Image 1 (cartoon, rainbow, N blue to C red):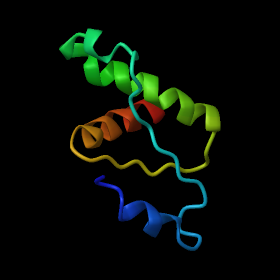
Image 2: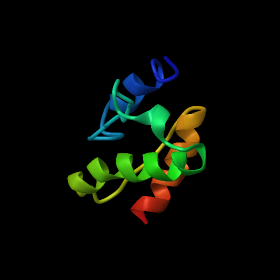
Image 3: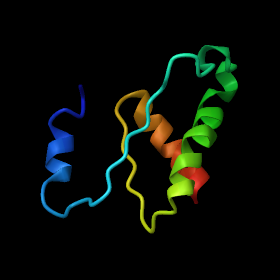
Length: 78
């Protein structure tokens, strides 16, 4: 819901030719990750598909916890 108005704007014209989203899926083991390791574990997990795409440039954004994850994912992609 936080992105309902943003996504159509980003897709309009040639602002961002490729737009991808990351999300949790049931059964991903999220609740089993120790809190002290949560962000680093999720960032490593979520950065893998980005690396596999081998983009030349990446813009990350997130809302609430997603913003914190975006910052941690950026560290993984450095």
